Length: 365
Image 1: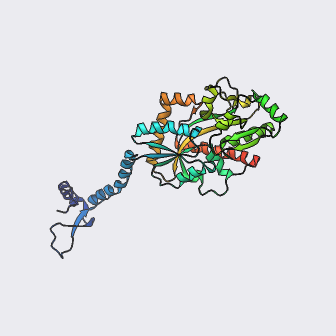
Image 2 (image 1 turned 30 degrees about the vertical axis):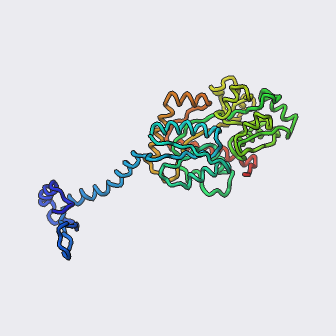
Image 3 (image 1 turned 45 degrees about the vertical axis):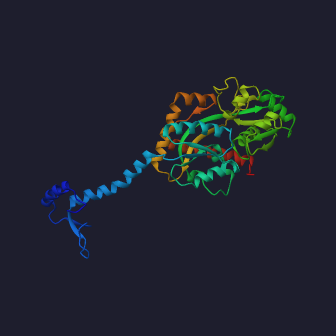
C-alpha cells in the first residue's frame, strides 16, 4: 500500500470505486522496497480522495500561521522609543512593556533611539522584519513629521501598521517657579512687554512640544525664542536657563507636585483629573487645544494574527485597574480600540498638525 493512503483510506477507496467511475487522479509515490531501476509506483485515487488530500495540504499554511501566532513571542521584543529616557513616550512605553512581558512571557525591552525628531527610531521599525519583534511607540511626532520632512526614507502611514492606541495626555504649559507670571493672561502680558526675551524650550525642532508652543504663539501673537533640545529640557527649565516648556504631563507631573515647577495651564479642551486645579489654555485663548497621544505600531506586512494578539493584550492592559490608575496619575485619558480606529486617529492628527507646520513655516533642523 502507498504510504500516502492509510488503512482507513482503503475503505474510503472501496466506497469511491462506486461513485468515481472514470474520474481518477494519479499520484506517484515512493516505495521503500522498490528495486533499483524500477519506476515509482502510480497510485490511483478517486476524485473524493484527491480533493480530501488537496484540501489538507492547502490548510497546512493557515494552520502553521495560527500556531506561529499563538506561540508568539518566543524571544525578546524591542519597543523602539524615538525620544530620550524619562520623556513621556518613554514612561508610557515602560509601563506597557512591563505589562506585555508579564502577559506574554517574554521581555519587551525598551530601546531609546532619539534624534531627527523621532525619525531615527521610526525608520528602524519601518525597515525591520515584519515579524513582531521590533515595534514602535508611536506619538504625534510621527504625524507631524509627515509634513515637516520632505525626503524621509519611509512613509509613516504606509510603512507602519497601527496596532493599538493607548492614551492621550495634555501638555502642561510650565515655568520655573521664579518666573514672574502665574497665569496665562499674566504670561501673555509679560511676553508682549518683553518680546523676544522669553526662551521657549522643546524636546526638538518640530516635535509635539515645539508645535504646541508654536500654536500658542500663533494664537496669542507673542514672540518667544525657540530653544530646541536633543534630550529632556527639564534640567534647563529647573535651572532657569529657559523660561517655559509645553511638556507632556507624564514627564512633568512629579516636578509640579513637588513644587519644583509651576503649571500655568494644560493644553486640552478640559481640565485634567491629575491636576484639577490647573485651568486650560482654552479658558483664556478660545479654540486652543493640543494633546499628546501614544500607541503601538509595527512594520507593514506584519501578520494579522500578531497585530490582533498585541491589540488584545494592550486593550486588556487598559481595562486593568492598576494600569488605569497609573495612566490616570500621569494625566492620561485611555484610548482603547481597534487597529482601524488607531489608524483614523493618526490620519486626523497628520492633517491637523500639517496645518500648523505650514502656517508657522516650521522647518526641520
